[in-house]
Figure 1 (tube, rainbow, N blue to C red):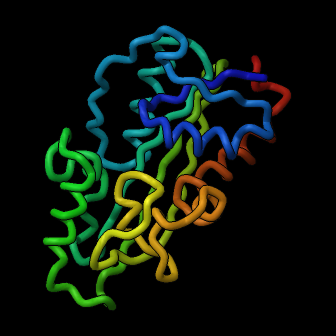
Figure 2: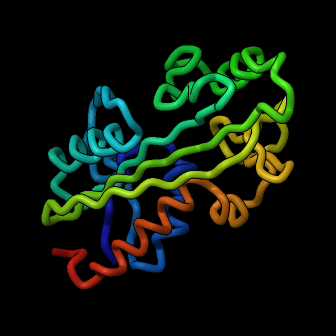
Length: 201
C-alpha cells in the first residue's frame, strides 16, 4: 500500500479519489492526517491545470510524499464560461454552496432550457516521490437545471444535470462513471498503472 497525500480538505472529494485509485494499492490521506499544515495556497493560475499544479507543488514541497491535487469548476455557456476557475469563489469564497447555487440560478432565470448548456472540468496534477509530474484533465457535459434536486453530491451537483438527472441524485457509482473527476481520475489511474513498479520510488 502506498500513501498519496491529497491536497484537499473536502472529505467527499477524498472519498471519490479513494474509490477509483484503491485498486492500485494507493491509500489517499490528507496532509492533516500526516500532521502537515499546507497553509493557504494562492490559486492564481489562469486555468484549472495551472491551479492544480500550484496546489500539488505546494503540498509536495512541504511533505516530500507523492501528492495528488485537483482544481475543478463549473463552466456555463450562457455566462461566457463563468464561474469557471472561480467556481469556489463565486458569490464569495466563504459563502455556502446554497448561496452560490441560488446566485447562479438567478443569473440564468431568463435563459431557456435549450441554452442552459454547461460542463464540469477537472484538472488533476500528481507529483510522484521522484518529482515526476503527471497532469490530466477530465470533462463532463450537461445542463443547468431550473432548480436544485437530489440529496447527494456536493458543490454545484444539485443543479448540474446529465440526461435529466442531477449529479446530486446519482449513486456514487453512477457519478464516478459520468463525472469530470471520474474521467480525470481514470486517466490518472492509467498513467499510474503504467508506472506501478516505480510508485514507491
